[in-house]
Figure 1 (cartoon, one colour):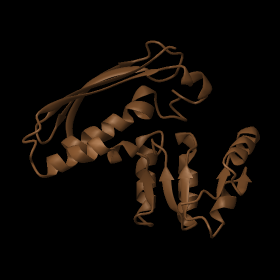
Figure 2: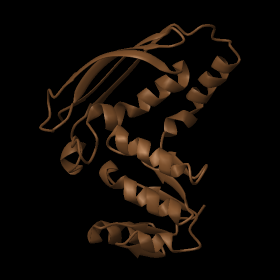
Figure 3: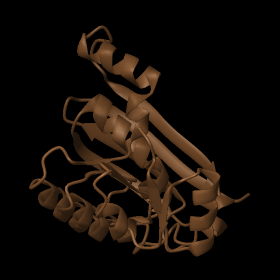
Length: 209
């Protein structure tokens, strides 16, 4: 594939990205990219709080759409976008690149051929440094990001948990804002019981530094 263009409301970052990657098109208005017949795929990397309109506009323009996770900052908006995308089958996906990691694909093959036997438990943990929070102005905002360490970081592990273990049945969880000056959570822990019987423990935290 070839990257044709980039859109950004920040003129400095737009110019820097365009020059660094020798992009033929740089614009502050993303709709200019949607109008181009030589662009097939739109990759949305904006904060989650402004995904919705771009997703809808790109689908209506006949593009394939890859949206960064989370698709939207709350469940109601996500459900609305899923319903909207049903008018354009196979055109919308969300970035969960870890599904395609070699070790995960190997694990899923072993699960599918039943060589692992019955899955009864597991643990998923993530710890991240918080230095990037100052640079990411909207990180930890309920309205723009949809949350903190769970929604914007541990969401990858949550996706893998459901991929491996199936549909969750019940969740017991606690979370809090322990280290960082943000609206939402920077630490959480949970136990998830899945319909097929497995019980999985998980946790995530974003610290200082």
